[in-house]
Length: 230
Image (cartoon, rainbow, N blue to C red; front, side, top):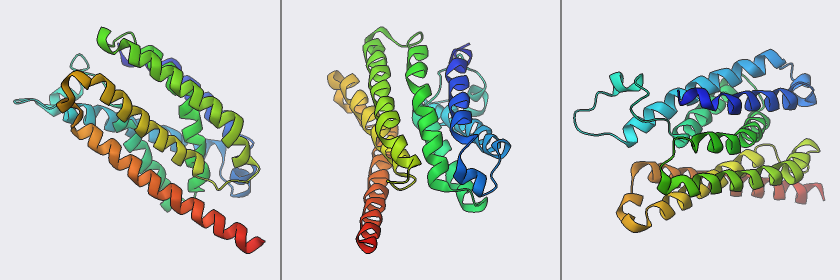
């Protein structure tokens, strides 16, 4: 039942991705069709769904738990958004490496499409949230909506006119996602601060540091390129 409530967010994600990809001149020039783009998107979705469910069960592992059985028993917990992000990162990287798809542009389009879906995803999740966490769920929806406005008004136009390097938007998304998730987890754990030190937050910290490293590397290469042109 819970997964059905996320269908509106899924449809919005696919619609935005369609709008971004269908007339993109870079994809057209490289011979990447709309069908190929959606094949990648659906593979990304399935892998993200799998990793989201798997990591949720691993993050909430208890003695005697049968992960294989519980994986298909959706009355026992839900999904991990962090797990979904990790699954998506793996698919996008492998796709860019082995299918000669422009990795930076693909990741930017997927990140922007997901940014459209995230506020709706959190609003849907509010139905199942605990009362103590309900405020944070709504705050996350608002914060991600503001992040979406920043992407649409500022970063996306720069991606399209190529004044910033491809891939930067997706790195900003990963930085924002990991930071927002860590802050939310910290606020929820204030009364029991030891709960903050868990595997999911360790992974989120790793994502933040890795994204920051790539962001700095991308900005340095972009700055060097501008200096050479001048």
